[in-house]
Amino acid sequence: MITCLKGYHMIEDIFNAFSSLDVVEAIALGGSRAGDVFDSKSDYDAYMYCSAPADEDVRRDIHSKYCLFMEIGNRFWEYEDNCTMKDGVDIDIIYRNLDDFVLDLSTVVEKVEAKKRIYNMHVA
Image 1 (cartoon, rainbow, N blue to C red):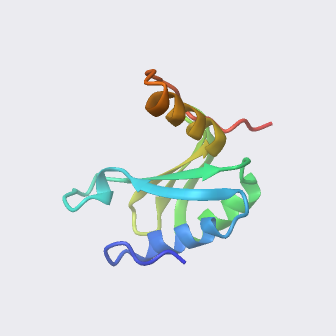
Image 2 (cartoon, rainbow, N blue to C red):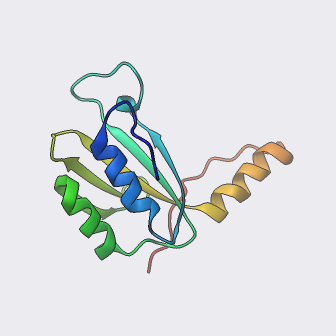
């Protein structure tokens, strides 16, 4: 169970819904709204580290409970869902392959080799 982030229950609910999926191994919150100082244009970036792609229909079902607008499976930067929550705040949910992320992290930390990579989920 994810505990409430600075009193923001909608994010807590979204994270709890995604954390119940078998393929989601870890979740990280970022974006300009995740800090203590933000403005009305700030958004959330939620990173889902997954063992396999999460089903788009399942994601759409989760988003429909909390979001007014949903763009599912956007691939412009990374594999992500771009949504506007019911309170008007934008959230980008980015799906990353956990194995690729761990491999690249190991390369940077243990082998001291720089990497520049976008962690796309490989979706058929």
